[in-house]
Amino acid sequence: MAEETGRNFIHEIIDADLESGRISQVITRFPPEPNGYLHIGHAKSINLNFSTAIKYGGKCFLRFDDTNPAKEDDEYIQSIKKDVQWLGFEWEEIRFASDYFEFMYEMAVRLIKKGLAYVCDLTAEEIRDYRGTLTEPGKNSPYRERRIEENLQLFEEMRAGKYADGEKVLRAKIDMASPNLNMRDPIIYRILRATHHRTGDDWLIYPMYDYAHPLGDAMEKITHSICTLEFEDHRPLYDWVVDNTDQDPKPHQYEFARLNLTQTIMSKRYLKKLVDEKVVDGWDDPRMPTISGLRRKGYTPEAIKDFCQRIGVAKANSEVDVKLLEHCVREDLNNRALRRMTVLEPLLLEIVNYPEGKTETLVSDNHPMLPEAGTREMTFSKYIYIEQADFMENPPGKFFRLAPGKEVRLMNAYIVKYEDVVKDQDGNIVKVLVSCDFESKSGGATAGRKVKGTLHWVDKATAVPAVVRQYDYLLKPAEEGERQDFMDRLNENSLMVYENALVEPAVKAAKPGEQFQMVRQGYYACDYKEFTPEKPVLNLIVGLRDSYAKAMQQE
Image (cartoon, rainbow, N blue to C red):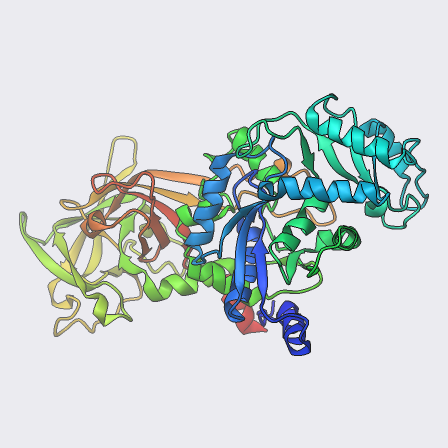
């Protein structure tokens, strides 16, 4: 599990293009379709396109591919803009494919006049049948040889609304025997009666992506049109459109491997299904790999960009361990997140030799490696809470927490020793009695006495009730050698909610979205939608244990 080196063959191409004089300025674009929220895979593309423009002092456009109004929504446009800015990038300009609808129509007319496009009356099913297979050539449409004048008239009538949806399409005339199925007279315009979010009902025909995309690149003078590897077979069509509509300068398309993460759904269509079927609580559910979900969970843009840098930009598809992403956020938060204490499942401790009614103020560092982060005060008294899991009446071997005959240190406080338990009538433990070694106070003259266990805690009188959400992967690991529907792999234990958790008082002063390291627990963020000082809601970002770093050390 070697760490990636951040290699980037795109930049090697750009270096050569600049040296040869093919280009004088780098211009890229990030062109999402506004039909859903962006996910971590899009973050890789955002980072590549924007950081490339920054590196070479160029420009990067944010262009919305809004050529399919039936699936697009302004909600998605706003979320995409927010995601790009949250990651720390600013676009040169915002553009829309719909800005170029008239130009695209004119270029289609140009193709018709050149004899390179025709109106076809075949149904969608007939077009598929005529297309052929990977091993057999397709056959020409009976409408392929229509006269240029007739095609011009029919295409104009399509725009004017004379025909029903699906009744006619405009196809490029290329080669029905091409070994590349994308070149077998692809559809470049279809009739679609759907209100567009920007153009309303002005248009009744819409360009297909493979036709619109290269023309959008040409209009913006994009020098390096960077897309994922599944579009490699579409590049000949991209070049055909650019060449035959006489674009100058000519944009060029380059493909890189898309991001695949273990135990992670990387499809907008599948993610939308989870939202629509209410498997998750919206696009920003912290279990979702959407950028908004990661933001709500508590990930930082710095960690995501670090992850993108580490995995590099490769030409071959591969699967990246999701633990590398977690490693990046863990490293980032370790350096910045203030330390706090929370108890998820409280168990009451009574310190029998501690005076009733007495309280004292203990001072703790906010961050052990950042003196400038200052300190905070914590109240300590006769009654405190620890985690239920930190006490066992009959512990196994090597149990270094509280148990009969054992001592533990309460973090930044005293060493306490087990004395007894109090149980209810059903035999459930409701309180553990301990005695305190008053000479062992942290920072005191005799604080050096060592015990093997150290426990976090909160004071009963000042602890703040909180809701803490623990998250696991949405998907269970794939069964080796088996292809499973992703819905069959859903993890029914992806969310665990601790409704009766307690946090130390300092958390009340936090801001929504602020991250903490909860000592011995993990990294948590204050939920930016539901957090209040009176009732903090915390989301687990990532646990403390870094199995990825451990695996790297063993290599």
